[in-house]
Length: 279
Image (cartoon, rainbow, N blue to C red; front, side, top):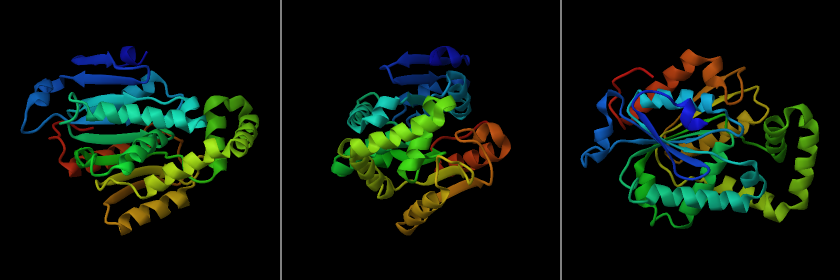
């Protein structure tokens, strides 16, 4: 479905696995840049939100296609969140792919939405275990963007599950999720806390950009701002775009001009690819 949704001329799609799709584009004749040893073509690592529709993901892909990126989409399943060991395995597979010969020389930009940030955190858990081994990868990550990051207490996680799995039975799913987390604490909560710890003490040193809103029930924005301040204290360049009111993982739709302006300014500042077109 995702491949059919991205129908721009010059874009080719390859399904690498059930959850991973690679989209290569030759818009404006940029495909040959991937073979250049001087300036390899950059890749956007896109981690969508749970339940995201192919048409919605395609809108973000098209933004990055116009600026010269190929896109590697890594989707997540509820099971990988509810049983974090599977999420950790998924993160390990993503890490192996990024380290493979096909992608090992390509600059990377990360754009994670909602629970996609959790999936990327699981990648970082593996990286944090041997930062020296993965230094080449962390150096290749030129920037990381987080849109509507699910953050805060277990209540925020349970709210997120309720709103994405069964919105019509949100309260029931939330209560069941909290009970599940308590019963399987060692298989869930302890893994969450470990991933959160790694995320706070991220091994990345590249600039970061946060999109968030004060009315997002799935994100404790004060906790997010506290983490952003902590990153700044460690010397990480951090930018943010906050709205009083917006929609979870829907800021582009709700505030298109402000969103695109902030995104374009951030990507331009990274000097990862010459921008020939407006986002």
